[in-house]
Length: 62
Picture 1 (cartoon, one colour):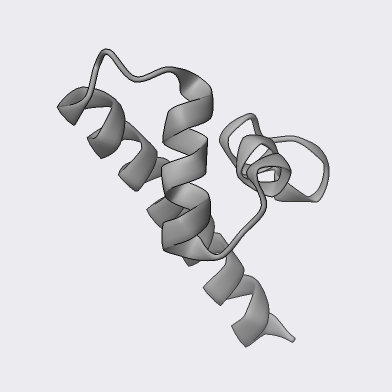
Picture 2 (picture 1 turned 90 degrees about the vertical axis):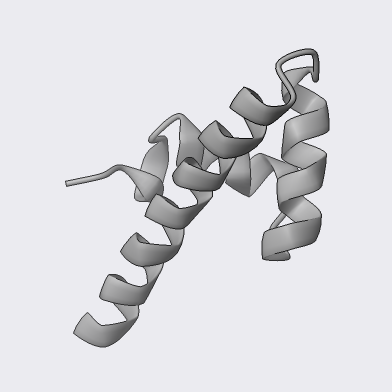
């Protein structure tokens, strides 16, 4: 189980890093457009991505 937790934490860090990269590259994009791009890239729903970015629920960083 610990291996999965590490992979999930790594994925969440990568999502946050990629969000920052896209936001800097396309500052005129709205939040929803960035989430749409991330959802296609990471195969996650926009709601899950939003929870990761906002540290909600089980996606809280330690």
